[in-house]
Image 1 (tube, rainbow, N blue to C red):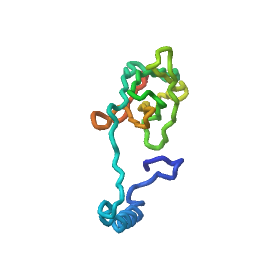
Image 2: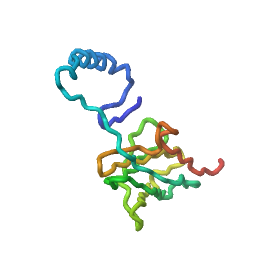
Image 3: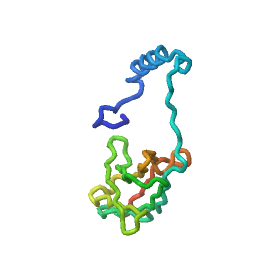
Image 4: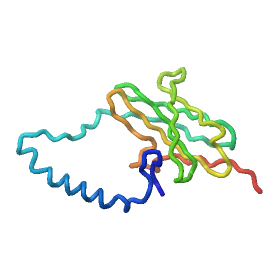
Length: 159
C-alpha cells in the first residue's frame, strides 16, 4: 500500500493498469503528426541555472526533541518557496509539510519538525522542495545523484 491516501492515490499500480493503458491508447490516437498540421508542441525548456540547495544533515536526532533544519537555497531568478516534507520511515503515512522561513541571512531558510513527530518506534525521513521565481522547481536531494530523501536515525537507548 503506497501513495498519498489523502488524494486517493494509494494502492498497487496494477489496480490502475487498465485505466492507464486506455489513456495511453487514447493519446496515441490523438497524436497524428501534430507538427505537420502547424500545431506547436510544448516541450520543457530547462532554466539557465536550477536552484541550488546546501544543507548539513543532522548528526544526532533525539526522540521527543524538536529538530531544527536549515538550508542555504539560491536561484538566479530568486526563491518563491522552500518546503520541508517529512514523515516517519513507513510507507503507510503521507508526508507532512512545513514552509521553511527565511532566517537573518536572505539565502538561509529553516523549519522545525515538532518533537512529537520524533518517536523511538520510527526513524524520520525528509526532503526539501524549492520553487524559484521563474517557476522552476527541484527536490533535494536529487534522485539522479542519490536517495531522494534523508534518513534521520533516532538515538535510542538499549533495552
